[in-house]
Length: 304
Image (cartoon, rainbow, N blue to C red; front, top):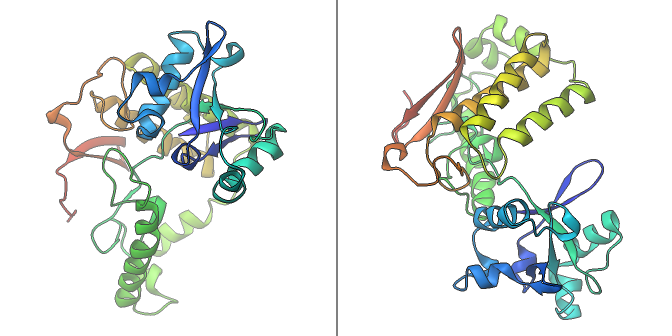
């Protein structure tokens, strides 16, 4: 996906802008070069999001053709009808005006490649039960309907169908609202979760952000991932509470990317650029007495 950079965060510029005729370009020899249309004549600007992101990454880093020497290219909307800009792309235009002071009807939007939606989540079965009794997951926090690339409409599928399924399962298995979690999870486990109330500091979250951005970006490799894992491990040494839980999750994500020695969908590794049948499986990470472990499970198998 494409994003714009602001002082506080990256903000998505939806691919709907390209769906309605937006064109990506950079400057080459003093002229606008519509690189997606030249490199991918069959799809142009409508190529899958991971392809778009990797292409922008390559244009900016390997070819040094980012606009103004930055990690960004231009998104041209000036040529579109006002009705399209005002109706279909109203949110995109308002975002550009609010955060960049740019009117897309008059000038291009500088966009950078963003990290694709992570297809993973809490491991659930077909009824949206997790491996912890009494806990259910649905929507974007659950691993259920996605392959290596998430289809846009799957967000609705996960929220509506997944939410209803999880709710029906929870209601059907409940003994009573007051004692269900205590019966299923145990009082000690609930007390442990209840103590995780202190929010991480801005400095802690920023340090984790930089680590993950450096190793789990658009293009990954063994060297970057190993360095990221080492950095996360060092942060864990003095961490506790919610921040420690976030570091466990970060470790699981990095170890999962390291274990999958191939490129598939949004996981692109420059040291393993090809897709391998050996990894036509689901990556499963778990946290236990031995720390974070990673294994692979057969596609479509429901955990026992």
